[in-house]
Amino acid sequence: MGSRADAFRARLRRLVLTSLFGAAAMALSYAEHLVPLPLPLPGVRLGLSNIAVVAAAAFLSPLAGAAVAALKILVPLLMSGNGIAFLFSLSGTALSYATVLLAGRLAGKRISYAGACCASAGAHCCGQLAAAALVAGTSAVIGYLPVMLAASAVTGTATGIILNLCAPALGGLAEKYREGKPL
Image (tube, rainbow, N blue to C red; front, top):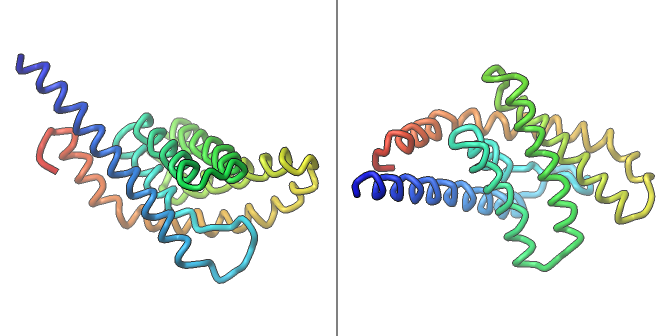
């Protein structure tokens, strides 16, 4: 009986912690809209919610990171009903998360948070521009790619630095989670 209860508690802890990372992604996304970037470039955002996605993947599991990424794109759809924004978010987030996983797998533990976040931001831009080309029916929007990639190098580095600053606390939280200690 104890092992079933322990397994249930472990699943519940995993769900709660993943949900907390998802809530953090939503809060960071909302905060990002309150503080606009000084450069008014269309489609360029700091990408603060990506911190929660990369952190969930790094400190919990790739599945937890995928769940946070899914929350990041589904909650705004449910709140706004904007299908075009959902398409942009889905294509950007899917490519971004796949890049984080691939970069982590290829580099092992040697990739920095700034590197993972930069690669993720660049891939997000590529996914969004692919969706824009699909919606617009023209590949002309791809001409905006150099601007988006330059911006993503800056924003990806910034979010990577923020994640690096938060990593000790998040690592401690993840360690308590793995050991079954109170969070």
